[in-house]
Length: 293
Image (cartoon, rainbow, N blue to C red; front, side):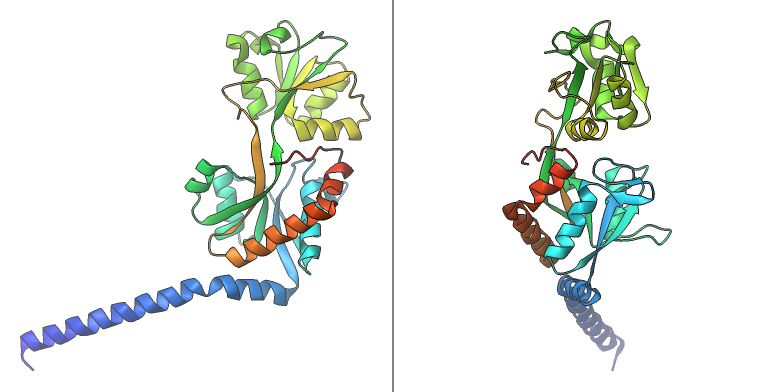
């Protein structure tokens, strides 16, 4: 065989090898969806990633991890004929995309995770487009910020300017804090107090240290129940801010992008919980309104 023939033959073999590798890659990429679902059922446990320190959804209280998302994880597992294996985690410094990387599609570099599913994920078109490695689906709540004020100290609040001269509070790093600090052209800034946790903000409100607080509706409603406060004295209202979503945001769950069978099973389980009233009971247990997404 001359040099030209050898080169031609080598080219054929390279093209054939490339085709075989491509076919193998297609088989490998197609397999995990069924293989992983079968593996989950064989293990008997659904691994669920949950945020640490996110009351009333998930929090460690007295050594017991509890909250709405914890109860939902257990209910989803039971509906699917599985137990729920909880993987609580700290939020990543890089934001929620980092959380999805660590807990859903890759796993943490320290060897923690990934889980089969992660709860409390925003179901937002832009966020979904930015995170193609995961499938975000099945919203189970619409959350949003509310301005809660003490009606014995503030007559009526329909806009941020009505809080002029009043001490207000919000959680550090939250959208509520940004809205208060920037509202009324910054006129409220000097009276805004920033607290490490939302529960501390609400305790300050209920104890009279501040006249109003910017928190999520779930945080407020849950605190009313746990701190035995009157919804008559403390009034929650929605105020518009360019820094906050106008209608709040939907919260759902996420799995790896190729796990559509698992996603379908989880969505079916969620729909069954909603139809039976169990989802409503879970939220009511923590004093939170289940606002439809």
